[in-house]
Image (tube, rainbow over all chains, first blue to last red; front, top):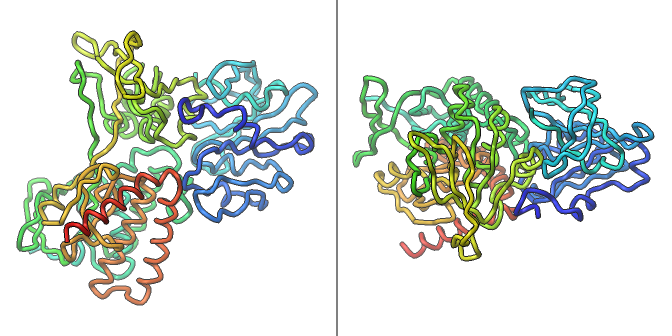
Length: 161
Length: 364
């Protein structure tokens, strides 16, 4: 359970997942923010109007998947590193998952790495497709990982080392 | 005699914001900080901040320190004294400062105490072994001086500081064996917890450290699981081999100068300890003395900056500066503060503030 272990439940993850139809249309932001905290930069960052205005700064973010084009600005600006972009149209067998990365040792494009789930367990071998300097220009990067399609909502990191 | 209109004691997020707000209204300000540089704990905060645009959300703490310092310098109204410790507040309303080889009195018309907090500690057998640090020291070593505190760390405390410093340790290339938390729930924001969890760091809620072992320095710790009454469950003890134990079990407001100034104080555990009674503009029971940030009650830096702004605006207005914009600005700041404290994560602070109000009423 999230409050005891830091790992969200299956139901929580399902609750923020775009539907099949939207996933079939290309990249889309997935906001894994499950606790009301005073924070709204994802809304400010979104240039498409997909992330809805906050009536109260403690609201959970709400996203209109129809307006989201998966640009990833929210990935760069979320202070909780809780936003990911998932593209299930990447290939027949693989999805592309974008994750924020704030570690000095960066993988290189083309490199293989263990894919870690939300518990830090290795669940797949993934390929780093792109190492993108974060649009927030704050020293962070965004890693584009090709992961087995069925694990697009499982893989959320690679190891630090 | 060194005279100043407003003396701000402490140059962390609250003090910087207070000095800036007062100076922007036209007041002449002196900002004194005992450290060699301004910024307080911001200078160690490498993570992006929460909150909203008004509190520099998404900026890293270190960048916020830089922004505030540049803005403060740009006003041309703030005299900055670094390496300057405020040592006392006297009956004649003078404050003494020790700076390098100088010791001198200051005569301020208003004082804003933004003295921050100190870390709480944990007592257990072996807790004095080298290798056992407070989280602040670990941050200072890593993020200010570029020194790794060790190779394998156990963190005690899953509040925001505990989970954030654990992440910073991973960034510094240090292994984090576990985060140990006595409460049954993670106290920090869950997004911070999720960040370290997906990198494989176990978060052990309802656990405590019961002993540290080592001949000359820390070699291992014994941890154990706690039951609902927070008693050690027999047989749950196990050892973790670590060379660093990082203790992050809360903060207490630094209230000595407020006591000395005669401010009426109340003990409120939800706010971290003794804090001064104050009005909505953060003026204490002593006219002309204001408080902001952790000294007013332990909270987040984003809220500390808003409090600083309120105290700075109010102190300036009381001297006749910016009276025409005061109401508008202070109302906006008040709205921001209510928002920051408004959600489920602000419940503890809201409870604490309600208790403080009650204590203040009883004291009258």
